[in-house]
Image (cartoon, rainbow, N blue to C red; front, side, top):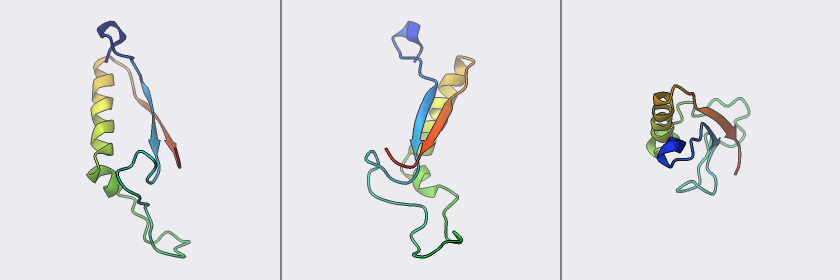
Length: 79
């Protein structure tokens, strides 16, 4: 929320790549052994849609946009 409303006013967030200590369970985007060409890589991020991360990011973007600002995200492979 807005600082004047008692919120922190954050406009930057960190998004983990694959599961991390905040994930409800362990997962990754390619469970095929030796798939060096990433033929089985899940680029749909279905796991993050299903577990609520993508909807949460979209909600945060909408709230920040209400303040005429943009959300910046840092994608990190671990926490």
